[in-house]
Length: 84
Image 1 (cartoon, rainbow, N blue to C red):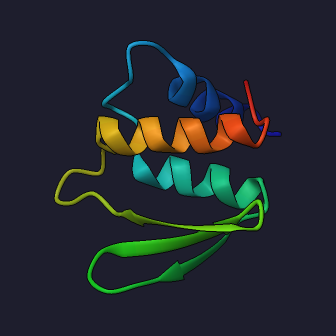
Image 2 (cartoon, helix red, strand yellow; image 1 turned 45 degrees about the vertical axis):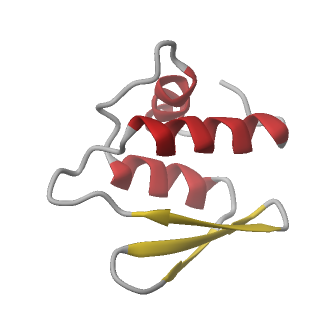
């Protein structure tokens, strides 16, 4: 895994939950892990990974991911044994 993706993963697992992770960085990390992304209605994005599909809302106008989405992604990764 590239250093940039490793850094994003570390930010996802940081405590307290970080509120300044760029959504684009999370998307590229998920793609690195093998995810398939699909556009949904509005600013929603479908993520197929680990044999599961999750739908997230792309943040706007700010590029930063909200804390709830970061926490949800962390739990999803943790359940599938992806850790920093």
